[in-house]
Image (tube, rainbow over all chains, first blue to last red; front, top):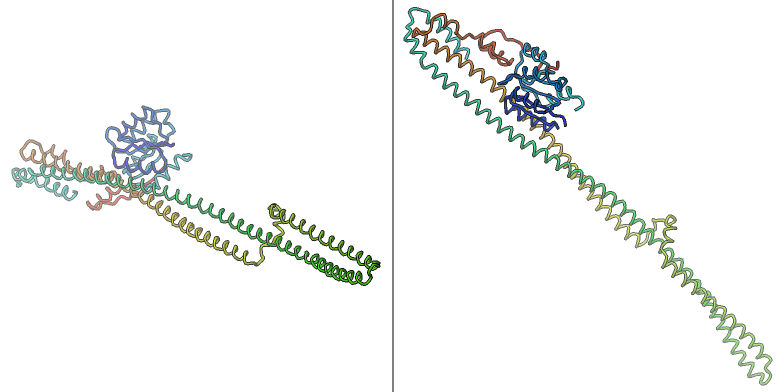
Length: 123
Length: 348
């Protein structure tokens, strides 16, 4: 089963996105911020896709992506940023850190699932 | 908020006016921090409240979603079962039709066999008539023999001739009796065979036409017709039930899509939370500035230091992350509206 890791400091966001993805047939792992996500990845969680918020406590999403990309097992894992941020400078920074794409909240469930199919064509 | 900041800015300029009393400024600003604390508390309360509400909504929607999905599964199973029942009914109806048709052919076949046997029995009448004729002639000859015997007295030459004829007639009678006996024995044997053997029908079935119109076939055809009507009726009911089940399945699927969409809409809470957090940060700035003003009026903070720490609307704008925030800011301050041209979804 394809596993998606959701990283967001909003419990509401995690809950709603988990519901949408689970119903679409994905297994879901969650983390409340970048540091927690890195801890889980270090403990053996192997997601096929990571969807992360940008502005989070302890470790923001762009730093998390930059750190996660250092792991050989995550070099080719798609990482999408899902955020309220719409500034071009942040997008450029995320792209440089290794993000695969940028989605501005709110995103409709069918749009999110469509993007996932694009970045995970075989799933 | 920006109005409050503008008012704060003009007041700061007024404090540089020597005619303005520092004590009065301090007195006017003293309740501001507490005022900000109350606003801060209220806004935090709003964040908490909307968070709880949104969480509750998500729980409800997720539960509805699960129920709708279960309903969809149940209906799909029902539709599958009904489809199977309809398929079986069609098979059973076809088999019943074949059975009734075969029954009609069988009865016609039996009917024809019995008719042929009756005709053969009619043939026995000829033998009976033969015996009657022989009997009649024997009587006449016997009478003649009696007359001749009386007339001849001792001379029995004529009697001998008559006696010979009587013998011949007796012989013919025997032959006729034998013919009747033989025919009857043959007929009995064939009847036994016909009644004992059903396999003849299996061999001759194709040669039998099922269109013969008799009381029996009409009755059997009526039974078959009623059975067909019943099957058609049941089939119609099942078809309607299948349509209903299909509709419910479709509705259920739409309901599931709607609830998924509703779950997606809950993202509003995260957006509202971040917007309110920016308002809180702005209120914090106002609170700090009011404290600085109090310090300045009391001589605890110099004019230069006050100017350095003074809040600026441009700083506030720099903190906005959402296009909507920047648009609202521009609308509030009368500044130029910045068009957000970047796509909402972008794959690098």
